[in-house]
Image (cartoon, rainbow, N blue to C red; front, side):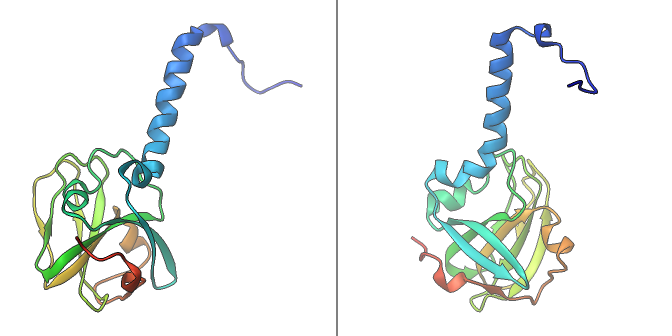
Length: 163
């Protein structure tokens, strides 16, 4: 069998090949395994006809770290922040590599507003009202799905309580 390309196996030292392969695999799986590495619970949420697998940040430490230091996140994965009280909470992107969109959500599961956030920015993005939750997804996820302020999320009632 002939391949439409030439393989040059001798072009790279085997040790370097394995180091590069391991680094690539670690980078790809870092976003997928992020919740497990941080010990965060996962929850299934929904909005409209879309399912979201959300990592749950319900402790002071997990809310503070959020998605910092991650380089990738699967398309249907996000992080839901569970706050101890409804307030005009604000988010920022210090040490965050992934461009994100954040939806601020009230006690009833209704999206108050959605903000687009830039990696490594210390600019604050705040809820337009009293938010009990914030849901971070890859940037543009809400817009691509036609999800806007006023939409209601399902599954918030099954989230672990804030600590």
